[in-house]
Image 1 (cartoon, helix red, strand yellow):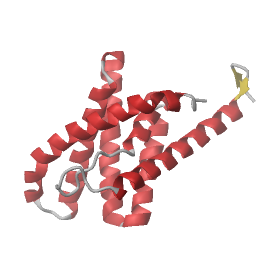
Image 2 (image 1 turned 180 degrees about the vertical axis):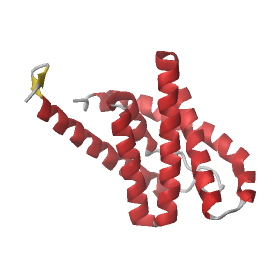
Image 3 (image 1 turned 60 degrees about the horizontal axis):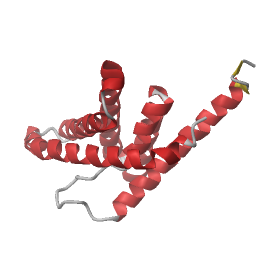
Length: 176
């Protein structure tokens, strides 16, 4: 058993797995809380995406693999609770958002703020969901909704980045 900094590798892996599972649970709770309130504006499908706080935390502090696991688990949960279309839309939005945020982190390293990464991820999430819906329903007319989704993505990214900053001191205590 390989040890790093006095902690056996298997214990570190177990802690990381437990933290990933906890982030998934937090994302489900945040989604449930968000869904219990009326939408912030009366436009169909517009939400802040509070559950993405867990994915962003995973990306910033646990790495791309754990963030990807959290995003995929979220989409599987949506699939199980709301059906195949909702699951596919969630997966497309989540994976594209994570890819864009990961790319921003790699390209800009320490020169980009959580806010900019979050906004880029939220906009990409909306684009991924819109692409999935337009493929499923084979309608290009859905793309007329794009300006609304871009504005909503900027607002949602701002809210989630602000909330992440707010809860970061608590989340940092969970790090393995």
